[in-house]
Image (cartoon, rainbow, N blue to C red; front, side):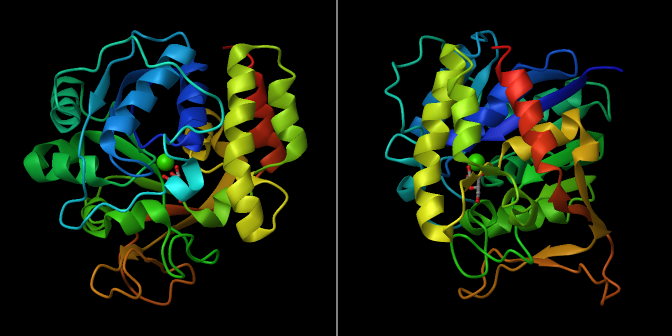
Length: 313
Ligand code: RIB
Ligand code: CA
């Protein structure tokens, strides 16, 4: 099978970090062309720093990391230090990265890559607010039909919101950007809270990472330990949802996931429901299908895959 070329657009974030590690641990299946940072969980100076830290941890200082948008298209930035800590990667203490940040802006990298690579061969994997992707589509509409697929973490329907009663964080931060992406006609696979809230990092799963005996395993255990404390308190669940790696796991083992091909639209008008993903799960409208909206996963298979791959680093 040909390696899938991907660009990971990210706001690390402990769960983003695990997603990046999973991708870099899977070179037989995935070629990471670059990592583009966006403001989200924490401000851009931290997300671009954290993205470089994670690439170095994986032994991949060769992966180009780019800084992108430092705020949403048209709204003030909302961050999530209450979940991820002030650095965005709280848990273990981490040295500053040694690898350089690329000078090219992330949006220009996305546009140039999609223009230079053969059409239909690059997958975009956004796991933070969609500002960089939307700006690339605004700057260069010609690249949209050239995208093989967008596999994103964001949205919620049956699971409702995690930053407001109606909205999931990534979509909430920049609903206008999400609207552009969901209207782009690019093949879209969505990992909403409906599925990520079934991917709970329980204490024994954290321990499995710690017992790997590797620095990466210990880092992932420390990150997920930290990340878990907030969600456990909030949801009372046995462990925190490990959201972002669901996108990479889908690229590696799509059969772990199930969902429906439906219409999903983004609420941008009302302050009460801004960022809501209005998913026509029961097909009660004749709105056009624009997304594969995931609803379930094989959680054991997901964590078995994660453990097997992270142990490689
Ligand atoms: O709502 C979960 C999403 O918001 C994840 O991508 C997490 O990293 C945060 O960005
Ligand atoms: Ca994220």
